[in-house]
Length: 251
Image 1 (cartoon, rainbow, N blue to C red):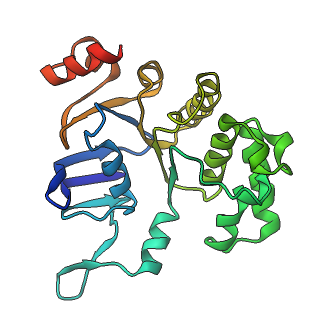
Image 2: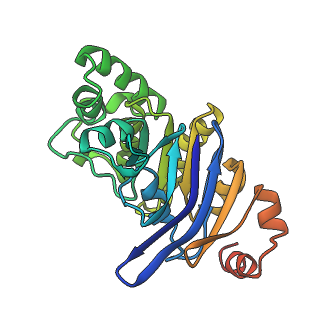
Image 3: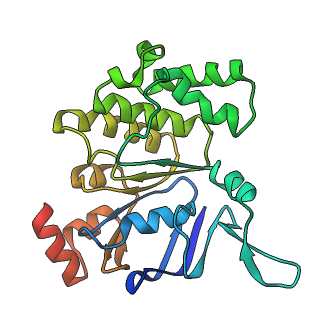
């Protein structure tokens, strides 16, 4: 589903990603962990081209993201319209919910599918209601998002991403902006997605959740992947000294 090869990214003189290589199989749940500033969020954002890359390549479903090979065999940037088409297949849930406060919950969930996918509004609304049922918010369809708790708003954001029927879901620390008592309700929804076979890449500091839901844990430090393996291996028998140092502080 995802293949990143030798991905490099800098902001000015500061190198953020250095020769990152990552593959994610269809239906796999990969959780990226590591200290703050390790490059996890930047890596996630390059996968749907919210951040461009300086070198390397990223493919989703075999297709170069944000780039294409022209008739002369040269790699060039995709048009904005073509990039929007690609992004429609990649759901992204941010730390902050980015919902429209003047719209109802149902309108927030259905808007992108109507505007980007050009699907009939009645059909999209029916599916949006199914998704709200799935995330435990069927009774909030007509409420304004500003009336919801943080945990409820993040569940709306997940439903909104799912309304596009993406092939891949990306989560950037989706519980970091929540009060502790609201974290569980969001993680429960994400566990349900994992059980249903959704391909997911998650940046998270929730180690208990990571151990429970991840097929593979990827550890990043200083802009590179230093370790990758099954949760039990990474948490119980880490191979890299830096992994051991990091885990000693968070477990």
